[in-house]
Length: 385
Image (cartoon, rainbow, N blue to C red; front, side, top):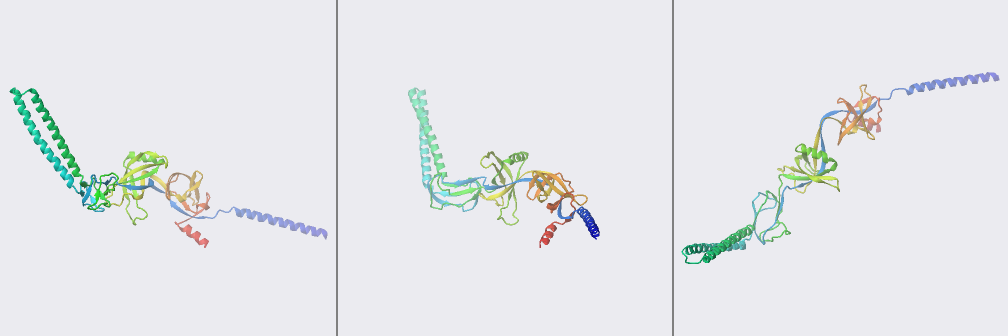
């Protein structure tokens, strides 16, 4: 009886061991099944001409700006310019009380007339002295005296003429004209106001040239080489971008670089650049802050992919592309230029499709289930709900 029980237990043990072996084989065969397809969004690689640009903050400045001040001490007789008026070069803006200066000019002219009459008399005396010397009625010294008096009279007349010119200049200070064409600012005086000839006096008005107009901005010093190369190649285009508060659809104003500063600011590591813009519409205003964009060069026929498609591992860059068998293929690329949401790369075929959404779940050889743009995000949100 005891022997029969032992045989029964041994057979049961062998049966259990055999069943475990078959279960292990089944598990091993189940682990070798192919991976499930992954939902991804893909984008077709583009071939395009890509401009390389630099964005910077700029300040609008007038090409010419003049503060008008009086050059004589007087009172304002007339104000012929209005606030914000457009004026032309040479246009009369202010007239001062000129009675005293006009009287001084009349006095100088009278002095000149008197001395000219005296000079005419001295010329006649010299002529008579020459005749008398020729007839030996007077000595040679009398002729010399007459000549000396004539020379002194001529010098006195020239002095009077200079005095008349000086009086005319002083009188001209009583009319203030526009030295340049432009837009007048706020007028600071009124008829009857006292003005003084002083460099520290408050300007009567400012005139600024608005068309054309300049924009001054800075670029990083690491862009200096490309900037200088672009200026040597020809006219370098600059765009004045609409400000955040500008009206919707405001136009982009285009200009050209006219000057690059001769030194780099060592404290900020930037270099100053000046550009000139046509401003007939007066959309740019002196003192205004804005964003400018400089196009340094254009990359011809390059490969463009979304930044979202790039996989970064240290200094290496790669993308997943759709393989011929509709599986994920990891392709290394070289990043040439990053620009916003796009990137210029090398190492991809022009017909390649790159994965943008869902690449975090991929491995080389993973089957792909391609969705239209945005479908992967909708699927994920639905699964979360």
